[in-house]
Length: 312
Image 1 (cartoon, rainbow, N blue to C red):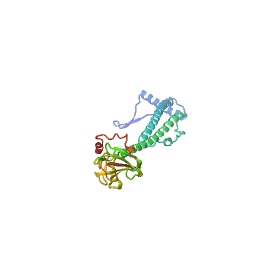
Image 2: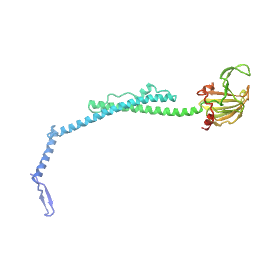
Image 3: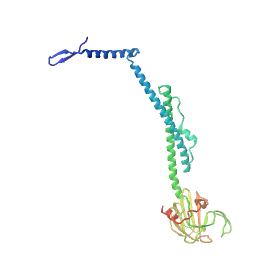
Image 4: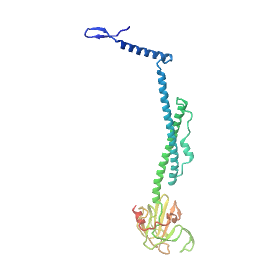
């Protein structure tokens, strides 16, 4: 039997450590079990059943992980449905701001293909669960990026539309004006020949307020042949408006105006058979029927409407 010694300072010699019988038995058992475990591991058997306990623990852990992966896949499938619903809402939003819908080809291209053969070094069933989750996550990520870009395009177009709507010539230039001559070919009342009437004539007493029909910048104030005294406004987005036969100017070249603002007073200048306002709308230089821009008929001719617009 081996002995352990310790140095005694009182006796100044090495003295043997005295072991109790119980301590010696416990130490022996511990030593033998450690040796047995090492030998068993080396030769492939497990005398204490430790490997079986470890395997059982790993099996339970794998079962829990598989259940969690299965639950994760179910939740991802629900997200796929949500993204599909967002795609439908996206189509509606794009239509509302006059943007084309994203084609099925674009949406499919954004999703991309699915990589089927992925090996994560686990069992076949666990490999399938991990592969499905990974593929679905990648697909959802690509769909989310596409949706994010689409929403950015929608917001940009919406903001541009709001500015466009403020500039479109959308109201009557005078309140309560009676339409006496429409847009199109007509027999000219003074020249007595068939000519294109490129605007409309609205009956109005001399001095009737004339309102800008959309936001813009005044580009011409002055005399212009048979139109008499004229104000022309560049409303932006390709639109221009012209107001003829005026008696007084209330704006000047380069001045910014807003829809509803009084820009002049009507009159009887130029080639005219009587007091009235000649009004034209052009888009990219092409004359259009101004009546088509009186949204919802002519209901804008209500008291206080023009003043409210001019304050905006």
